[in-house]
Amino acid sequence: MKNLVLAITILSCNMLGCVGTQTTSTTTQKPSDAINTSMKLNGSWELADIPGARVSVAGMYPNKKPVITFDVNDNKFVGNTSCNNFSGLLVVYGNKINFNKSMAMTKMACQGEGESTFVELLKKIDTFTINADNTLSLNTVGAETLRMVKVMKQ
Image (cartoon, rainbow, N blue to C red; front, side, top):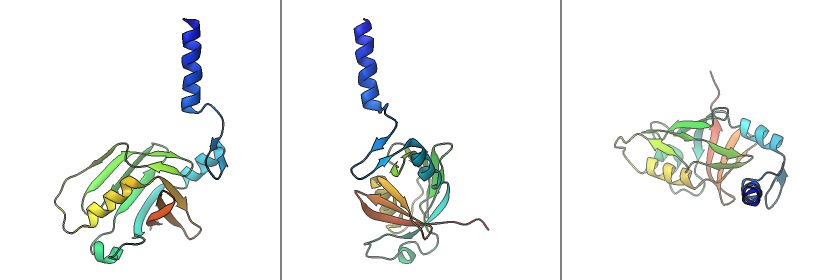
C-alpha cells in the first residue's frame, strides 16, 4: 500500500509539475516571472485589430467594439462581444492563456458576423504578449490573432 501511495505521489508531481520553473520551447520562466506577466493583464482591453481579417474592426463592429476585462487575482474574465456578455474562468500561467475551459455567454440575436468571428478566434487563443505600445496580442500557435488596446480609466 505504501508503494502505491508513493507511486501515485511521484506520478502526480510529474504530471502537475512540482519543479519550480516552467520550460517552453524557447524560454524558462520562474513562477515569479509568470505572476508578473499575468498581473499585467489586469484591467479592460478593447479590440483594436484582427490581423488578416478582410473587414476592418470598425466595419465589423460599427457601434461597439468587443472588450475583455481580466481579473487575475480572482482568476476570471468578463467581457462583451459588441452584442452579448461573456464570462469565464481565467486560465493563465506566464504568457499561456486559455479561454476555452469554461466560458458562459448570453444569447441575444446579433447582426452581422462580428460576434461569431470574435468568439471563434478567442477560443483558439493559447498565448499572449503585452507589447511596449500598451497593446495586448492574443496569439494562436505563435501568430497574432487578436490585438487589443488597454482601456484607460477616465
